[in-house]
Image (tube, rainbow, N blue to C red; front, side, top):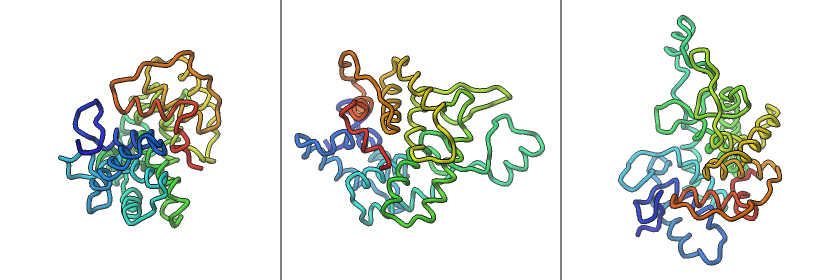
Length: 276
């Protein structure tokens, strides 16, 4: 084993579940050895451009580099690896809103309705912005801003927040990226609403009460462990009280979901995903 975690037990290690496992195990005295091996693997996956590969066989930087920057902040490891990762994150942008797209939209009105001035973060380089990578990147930059020069970070945070607020659906939540297509309002999803709220911590540009109320409603109703975990993380980090579960849920075979459930628990590590 290389020290990382896959999405399922005994599978190839990937950056995303490894980061969440490390967050869930952080400061657990019984897991020091496992944590150090995972941290060592994560550091070995950083590429020359400053980003991190998503898995050993892949040679391109991944959106999950944002999680690595967050982990550096949690551990207060503000070294050259952190600095290079931070610069990669600041420089990563969605591809939408170019001159040609804006010109076409002026004449023909493209079917996807959003403000093309605001760029978030893409899943992969040279692709369009989406809600989830934008929220994770905002969280990383907000945590990093306490130890890094504010100028470029503040500008990207401002733009990313504007992008998320522009993509919010009519019910106050978020889906994966678009609020309206072909003149039809699209619905929000529970898990992406929780993730978006995690990235919007500290946002003073808009009142998020309606979104937080929707998130609580989703948390009460959803049967999805992934959605429930992200909603709990978002709500708890906004100071919203949630009742303890009536009975413990059996462990999920999905390593990432299990790690997120641990972070989302009342006494879990959701504070590691809090901006202050």
